[in-house]
Image (tube, rainbow, N blue to C red; front, top):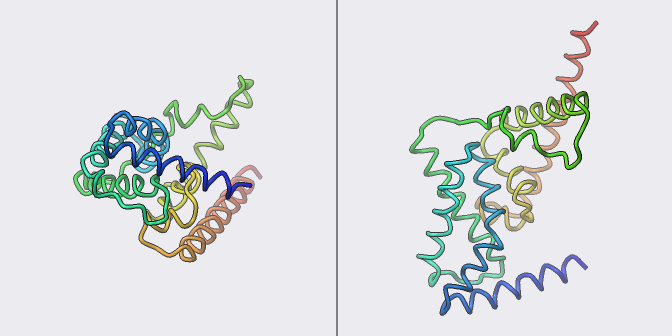
Amino acid sequence: MAQIWRDSTCDDDRELIQRAREDQEAFGRLYQKYLRMVYNYVYYRIGHVEEAEDITESVFLHALLNFRKYQDRGLPFSAWLMKIAHNLVANWYRRESKNLRVSLDSEETRSFASQAPSPEELMESREESERIVRLVRSLPEEKQQALILRYAAGLKHREIGEVMGKSTTAVKVLLHRTIQTLARQMRLEEERRTDEKR
């Protein structure tokens, strides 16, 4: 069932792409469809709202300017956009020449609960969110990127491979090892915190 939906989505994109070659309004629909995905990826890679907005706009400007060069190679249009986003984020890091971190006090980091929690629940969920963000940010850049592409941008293994220049199998192995590493780090941190309470 999911594969049928995926194919239908790709077909919808193919139709929009064909129309967008002649009509900018159709490109606007592609922009609206993928704006959140691209922004989420960029934001989680660099951790700053204004820069993420600027880079996201640059992704779509680059896509628009190079749209006639786009070729359907069997991957979703989103993979092409994410490859552009990946390149622009890499350029941004080169320019900044420092590794910026997501602010653990940012509203985006804290506002993941849909219901109004109690103060105790809010404190626990905030601490857990901060802990996960901190642990992810402690990983090597390649592992961070794979996690963000998979869980923040929602890309499939094959699409991640296209963005990162890896095979689907290599992406699966990388994600598996990264998740094992995170689980081990969380377990060790939990043991350390338990020992400190004794």
